[in-house]
Image (cartoon, rainbow, N blue to C red):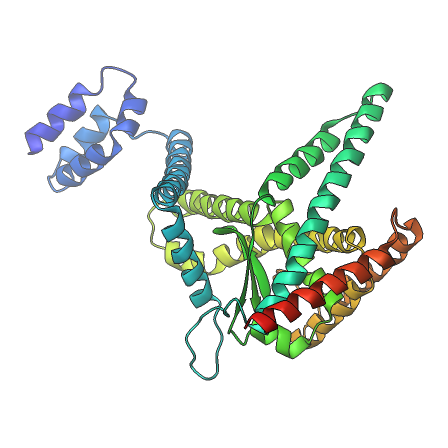
Length: 380
C-alpha cells in the first residue's frame, strides 16, 4: 500500500501539481496518513506533491458545498412536482391532512379535522371568502391597469422602468395564482390563526379558536381573509421558502470556511443558524406582512367592505397575542404599529372615494347571503 501511494503521488506531479492534488484530495489525504506512519515517508510525500495552498482549497470547498445545497434543493423540488403530477387529488388530501396536524392546538386532545360543509362556521367563512376572492381579483385587475398606464407614461418620459416592470410582472403572476376554484377550511383547532400555505395552493385555513376568541364581524373576517389572499398574490410563501433555502446554503458555505474539519459545526449551527434566520428570513417575513396589510385593506376598499374593520381586527389580534414590543426575531411587525398604519391607510382610502355605490352593493350581497343560508336550513 505504501509503494502504491508513493507511485500515485509521483505520477500526479507531472501536470499542474497543486490543482490535481486538490481534485484528488480525498485519496491524497488517505495516502499521507498512511505514509506518516513510516519514518521518512511523510517528508518524501510532501516533497513529491506539495499540499495545495489555502487560496485554492477554500474557494473549491465553498463551491462544492454551494453546489451540493443547490442540488439538494432542486432535487427535492422536482420530486415534489413529480409526486403531485402522479396523483393530484391524493396529494392534496395528504397535504391538507399534514397541515391540519402540524397546526393543530387542542386542550381536550381532539384529533385535527375540518368542519363539514353544513357547519354554520364553514358556511359563514365560505360566503365571506368568496366575496373577498372576487374583490381580490378586481383589485389585482385595477392595479394591473393602473401600472400599465404608469409604465406607458414613464416610457414616454424616458424614465427608469425596472421597478414598474417588476411590480407589474408580480401582479400578472398573482392574477394566475388566485384564479380557479378555492377551498375554505374551518378547522377544530383552538389556535388563534388563519393562514395559507405554499404547499397547498388555493386553500385558506381558519382556526375555530380564532372565530370564538376574537368574534370578528363580517368586515373584520373579510380583512383577515384578504390579508391571507394578499400573501398569495405576491407569492410570499414561495419566496419565504426560497429565502430559507438561501439562508441554509449560506450557513453551509460559512461553516465550510471557518470549520473545515466539521468539529464545531453542531455548536455553531445552534447559534449562527438562528442569527442568520433572524437577520435574513424573518426580516423578509416582516416586510411581507406589512405588504399584505396594505394589499388587504385595498381589497376591502375594492369589495365595498368597511375599511375601518382592518385596524379593529388587527387590534383584536394584538390584544389576543399580548405582543407589544418589537424584536428583530419577530416574524410580524408589532400589532400597535400595524394598527396605526392601517388607520392612516383607511383615512387615505376614504379620501379617494369609490367609483360605485357601495351601500347598494353591500345591501344586495347581504340579502343574497341571508337567502342562501335560509335555503340551506330549509333543505337540511
